[in-house]
Image 1 (spheres, rainbow, N blue to C red):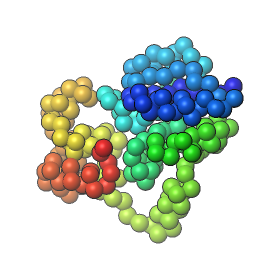
Image 2 (cartoon, rainbow, N blue to C red):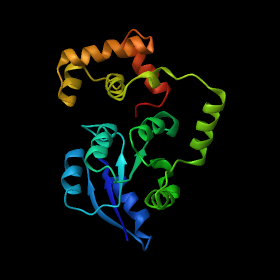
Image 3 (tube, helix red, strand yellow):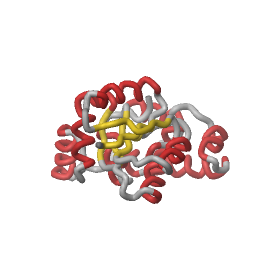
Amino acid sequence: MINVFIADDHALIREGLKKTLSGEPDMTLIGEASNVVELFKQLERLPVNILLLDITMSGESGLDALKELRQKYPHLPVLILSFHPEHRFAVRALKAGASGYITKQSATEELVQAIRKIVGGGKYVSAALAEALATELETGSGKLPHETLSDREFQVMRLFASGKTSSEIAEELSVTISTVNTYRMRILEKMKMRSNVELSRYAVEHGLIE
């Protein structure tokens, strides 16, 4: 039996995933969490075979949680779920240690297949993403501005782009306002932009914020 755990802060999404899994005789939902703190508490006591992790949960981001998971549970396979297009987040997630990446829009069609492949020791990306990655390697195309950011810079950029202030971001990330402003300067410099408005416009155009 494959013990599946779901970590997603949208109750409707969790219900939809549970419905998809309910028809599989060799899979069972062993637990669920709506935030990262709850996730780690439950992982301490449950025999999880695969974790379905939302990449953009409120509070600590899925990418940050993924890095912590790799340290505490290095052998636990993680399948990332996201509303965002695969080519925007998938490579970053896979580099951070995910075993696979699917969009929530395609979860009904791909979820079971992805779980079986990952639990069997493989990695899972959609055919469309595999083709896009192969094309990028073949053409040697340059990186987009946001792809030059570190994971933390990328997280801060998305928070600024969504309209949050430095103080709000500092509180959410448990860092000082000075640290947040330092990240902002680095982000603007790397992305060759001058304001949060430009960041917001860019993030919307590239599907980086909901």
